[in-house]
Image (tube, rainbow, N blue to C red; front, side, top):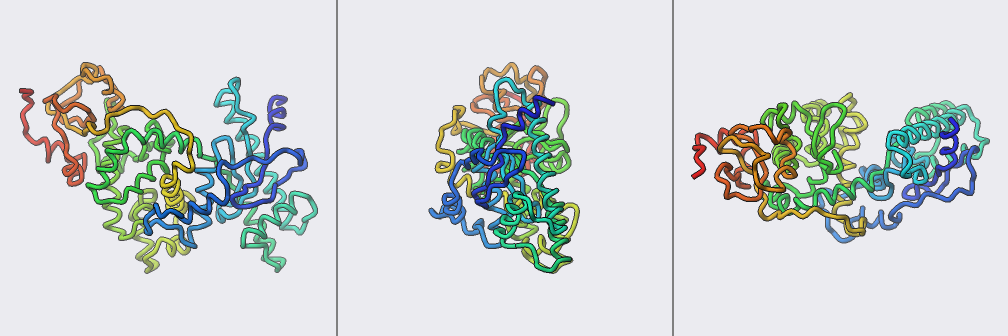
Length: 440
């Protein structure tokens, strides 16, 4: 307990200057503690979201409806790292109550589990404190320093408290129940850019062959920060966070030896097939991209019931458990990441160590013959094929792989044209067919 109290004195509750200038103070903490500093300025945020150098296609512009949502998520991805936790209103992302800065809690003597426990404890306490003050405001009590600060934040949000007493009470109680925290992601997005870089040439050609916007590559940053080792509690895996059921329609069935969701290139081919089908069904990219998270059937149903054609109208008027906070914010997060990636050199000027891959010789292939990965004389084989879980085992004919050299006759190259025509689950039947296992 003493250790926790000691750490409590280290954190900073600062203003979120990308939305508010007011510092949220607590009576338990010194008012002269310095503010947490955002990594990029508010003016730079405004310029990038306005796409001042026209790097983002018009189809992915930030319009008036999406602006407060996109601005919030852009701040999460570019201005605050995993050392920061933002306290905000989950229904109105334009309302940010403050930013907890845990930079001083990070150190070599604190393991990640202890650090996580400390962050969760402090964040919970601060959320409860904000909730308590909002509840007091619903009862007409606005005497404390924090209550005055919260009132200013709410007035500056564009949706100030109403004057009518009964409506005002309901307003504050709703705000008290809408408090949420969000951890910053700047450092993980920067790492994701380094993870993606070796495959950039392959992706450029793949998206061109599919005739799809290359900006869709923002989705694996949204889903996993381009971390191929990402696994969710509900079973989603890989950079695209494919769920097992959805993946089963696009890639061969996983087993104890392999899981194609764990290969960033094979999974990307599957994802582009899914996104292209979503677009064909739903007609617009905002709906197709949201469907990647929520599923197409819920959006089709909403569009039919409401007789509307835009995602904005659906989010304003349709209520369904499958269109919760994550789904409602998915497209805004995507747009924020599209702009982040378009201006990544300005946002992340520090160079990261990027693995060297000869991307011009990178190929997807299918095995003509059975093979043992561990016996293949290619030092990059295991790195290129993380989906092969047991490299000492024998893998059967028809196994999909990523390779450099195509002089090994045991493997048949899959051309970009065929990747765009056939789902990976169909490659064995439609591409490999009855080709001989002969290596001559």
